[in-house]
Image 1 (spheres, rainbow, N blue to C red):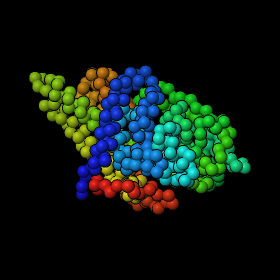
Image 2 (cartoon, one colour):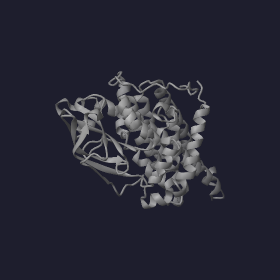
Image 3 (tube, helix red, strand yellow):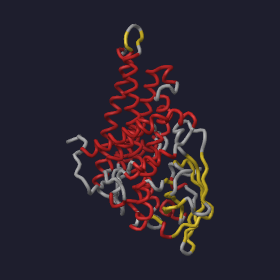
Image 4 (spheres, helix red, strand yellow):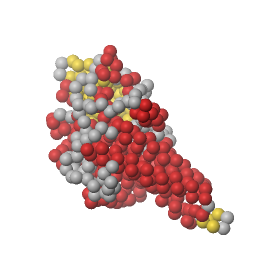
Amino acid sequence: MDFELTKEHKQIETAARDFAKKEIYPTIKERDEKGIYDKSLLKKMGENGFLGVCIPEKYSGMGFDYLSLGLVCLEFEKADSTARVVLSVHNGLNSMTLLQWGTEEQKKKYLIPQAKGEKIAAFGLTEPNAGSDVSGIQSTAVLKGDHYILNGEKTWISLADIADNFLVFAYTDKTKKHKGISAFIVERTFPGFSSSPLKGKLGVRAGNTGSFVMQDVKVPKENLLGKEGDGFKIAMSAIDSGRFTVAAGAVGIIEACLEISVKYAHEREAFGKEIGKHQLVQQMIAKMVAGKDIGRLLTYQSGWLKNKGIRNTRETSLAKWINCNNAFESANDALQILGAYGYSNEFDVERHFRNSRGAMIYEGTREIHTILQAEYALGYRGDKPISNMLPSWPFKELTVKI
């Protein structure tokens, strides 16, 4: 097995690291403290190609593979979670889903400007009374002539006040339960669509999170993604991609906390020696090292499977679950190593601690992932083929093999 990254992987990794240092780090403490969302950051991401990093060149993307998206997420979240969230929502949940399920006309109309960063995309599944239980959504879509009429409310939507295009899920036939859910491409400019921000978040404070309401929103028939009743399958495939980006980003938090802890452990002395010489401090640092290496390997495995077009629900779920848990534990331990300093925003671990807690909830709670892994092991669940598998990577042969 060869775990060496290709030249292309290393190039995109370096580009993402440099972008984070130049564009994210300098202002993140102030923006996080004041809850300021920097719209100009989106424009810069688009100009540098990050909003279409793993979209084929045919659709104006950079043409890198799925693992490359993971590497960018890692470097961005090492700076701050809000930057990675953009990639998760715009790329992972929306654009990659259009690439997988969209018609050629839909890809030309929506995917191309999204890959260029000319349009920002979001994902609308969660509702006030429906999170992990997708079938509990209440939004409806009724076909009338050449349009579907959508009604409903979505909440905890990243980029709710920023995005131009939304991938929205609603019932077209409630009698069929989850098999009656359909997916639609909804534009912000459609009459009857409105959004509002959510305030008072524990973490990801420099990111835009909100709700949106649809009141008799007319959506053209051609904006139906897939067929009626495909919505649940589309949502699950989208979440597979979104979870991959979250899993990769979590490794960035682990690496950031490890680097801060090692530096501080050399500088701070207690009881006549560097605190790094104390075994209980070493224990916490060793856990971060394990989390970092395990996290990268799980991310590489999921990225490799995606590149091959192999369904990866179990592997990506495992990566998301383990990496996010380890990110929170790493931030918690780093805060402990830094003591009172870690409890203030003088050091980044305070922000990483708050941000990492959210990732144990969104894109599938840790409880959902625990059950999912057990059901695979017990044989209650298996990966059945679906009609629209993630496109296998056609451009480059990778040297990253699992």
